Length: 203
View 1 (cartoon, one colour):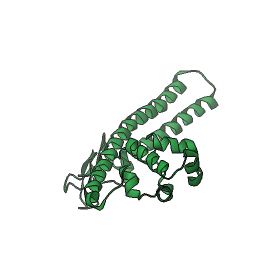
View 2 (view 1 turned 60 degrees about the vertical axis):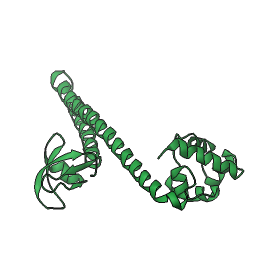
View 3 (view 1 turned 45 degrees about the vertical axis):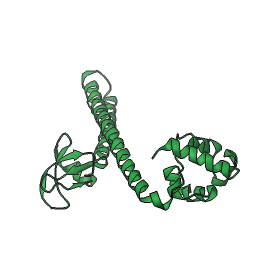
View 4 (view 1 turned 90 degrees about the horizontal axis):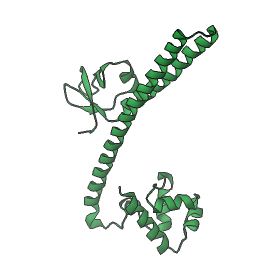
């Protein structure tokens, strides 16, 4: 989706209805700043108010998502293009998330080990040493679990046997043997266990 195009379309439709940004904002129960962000392409209207917004602007949801009035003649072509755009956006987002996972995981391990080393190498009260080790462990494990959740949901795992690509459960990823992002798991389609690689695209 082209947010800049959609934003210009929202502004055009608002003006056609003789509404100011403030008036539209009051009708949608949002701030005029939110409307301004929609119209400049900085954000999209929340899905919970899209139907009401389209009703006020006298357009369809399809029109809103395409950023133009869609006729029946080019509906199928535009639908296919939108689906492709959404797939590309998801893949780009998943790549960013997986890069973030590496940073979070690395930082979490550094905290975990750093607190342990400081507690072991420096003189301090026993209660402070315990507090430092426990704090490092808790913070480190929270970060590692968060990174693991990102790995589970971003992209797909591909079965080495039947090539089925899927998103596994969190527990499957958590308890699976792994080398990097390649995990030894059971495929939900063929039921066979294999080393499954992380991939970005569904097909």
